[in-house]
Length: 159
Image (cartoon, rainbow, N blue to C red):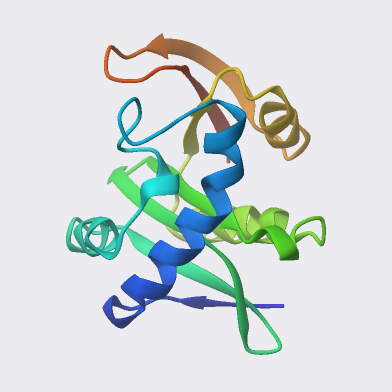
């Protein structure tokens, strides 16, 4: 597997990966455009372009030249990174792609002398939470947002 940095010309590809990879989560938690319009399952190229314009960096995983997943990196300050939009297409799951993308962000963060990587997930998504814990993330606080039909669990990885 190869991980490459994405460019603005990849917005369509990235939005497709993010949207398709998160559809099963939307179905699992009964999310739709009316109750969660910002859920990644509704991602479109404009979202990705806006992310890139704000300074986020996207990385794409490739297997034999085929795009299998992606992840975004955001650095809000000198010590913190956000791991965003981790997405693996369903037919490429359970092959270690997600772990490799997370480890890529960990290594990339180390190069930048970042001390904490933060993520936010659906708090009720127990299987995902347990997966992140196995990778070394620690549970933080949970927050309820009035515009979301679920609670957000924040998790951190200390470098």
